[in-house]
Length: 74
Image 1 (cartoon, helix red, strand yellow):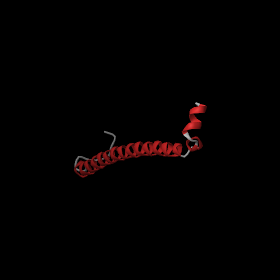
Image 2 (cartoon, one colour; image 1 turned 60 degrees about the horizontal axis):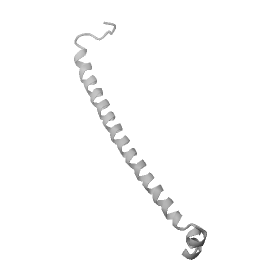
Image 3 (spheres, one colour; image 1 turned 30 degrees about the vertical axis):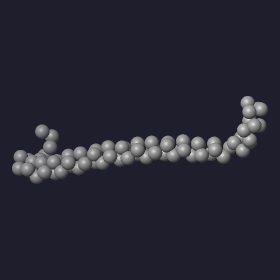
Image 4 (tube, rainbow, N blue to C red; image 1 turned 120 degrees about the vertical axis):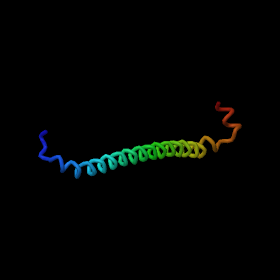
C-alpha cells in the first residue's frame, strides 16, 4: 500500500525477490557448512594439543631417572 510500484511492475520485482531469496538460502547453507568445518578444525586442534602435551611429558626430567631411584622416592 505504501509502495509506488504498480501492478505491472510487480512482474519485474517478483524474479528479483526470488533471486534474493535463493541467494539468502545459499548463504545460510554456506554458513552452516563453514560452521561445521570450524567445529571439525577445533576438534582436530584439541586432539593435536593433547598429543603435544603427551609428547612433552615424555621429555620431562623425571623420566630420565632410573626406575630404582624412582622406587626409592615413591
